Image 1 (cartoon, rainbow, N blue to C red):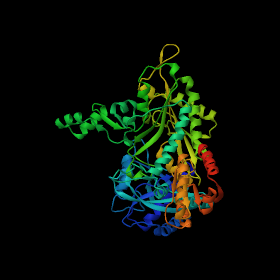
Image 2: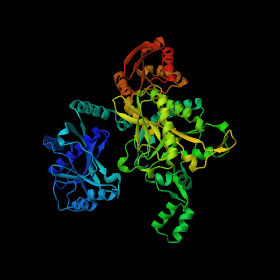
Image 3: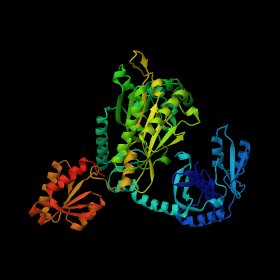
Image 4: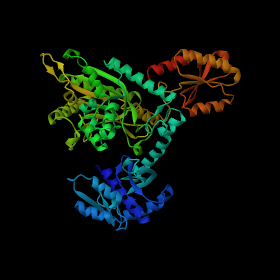
Length: 611
């Protein structure tokens, strides 16, 4: 936990203490720091609203002014349990009702971990820490909003109130952040996506399963076309794979069970399931047999790599064939908890711009360099120029990872070397690796300074061993290839969400669902407008004609609200001179010109994919 996270975590405790001063019966769950600040989940009959914030903040300021020290107290598991039963955990004093959420959290702490409490003033919380020295260190804070959240993100659990806030070291940092939050509200991809009719999430289809509407599908198609051109130039072969695969395939890869918590339940073979039911087997026995691999079935694929591996392994390979670069826009499925779903940024079904490179040991560095370059090209092409990277290494919990320490060391050193040679600015973060290998994740800042994680490049010595992959080397012997996983967009859904917010819906010409709108000044000019529209369509531009019986000003306002990049105003003068008056959604009127000149102008802009 860095210093800012420590400050925010401490502010969450101050928030909790303030809530309890006002509502002593409140049941607290958890209060962690998060990327934008902190929150605390609370169960309370009173419905908290922003109108309550001034009173809560006033209590927080008093607690801060008292400079209450944060005291770390280590206790036995039983001592903590007794405090919880007395209602003393997450409370200012003992209460008649047990601290049920704190008791549940206590049960989830591994046996080998110490049990620690933190106390400031009379508030005692079950917490691993760390915290700042005392509450007086929290100089600049603000409560921002409140929402509902299921306990532990699971819709089967009680719904709690989640009070959000943020804290910074200085008032200036806080002020800048609050301005950014206002900007973020205007740019929210869910709001703009609805206004521009880009995507839809329909509860009857299923939570977290977005539908791409026609306009959104245009943007997706343009992104895919752009990346496909890059891939073909770099020697990739495009494939298609099914949405489900056998359980045994994912058992071999390790996704089942290593990734099981993030997967939809297996789809069991109907014949096996019926035979099992006929034997009156219990659910527990079925789960046990699934665990042991004794029951067959299918899985909605959580990742594309096992299927690409089977494509590679479908015929004998020689060192002369390598590298083999297999790419796919493949849809995968993850069972995200309903409380964690959010627009397009956190979904249950999404499409990855996935590829897997099978290469020799000597080719690894060159292929990694090319992958890192590809991610940089993609990110820069859409105008996300403030880019850094994170090198995710294996953490201390070795049971989360597959493979030998030797293969991990080799992979981490290889990826570190390639990242350094590529010239990208990166930091190392233990515990951020994939379960099968280290990775480089790209972090970008958008137009209002928010940081997002995008493309990834991963180096893998473990899946080749798990699948017994081989190729014939120069020496005539069998050797295991190395696999590089890479996805420049990450997922098309999340990438589009970021672009919507980055551009605030004003997409550059090459991505805009509607590129040009022809606006006749009166009904008598619709025929001329239709002629212009047809010529633009023949030049493969996405164009519409506004036929509404409305004023010119109203038509222009509608086009601007719909963020159409170019508007062609056609009146009597334009018709007589075979010209058009050109407006843009951001700059307004840019002048009159011939249609040929306009077409030349936007053709160059489109072909160069200018931002």
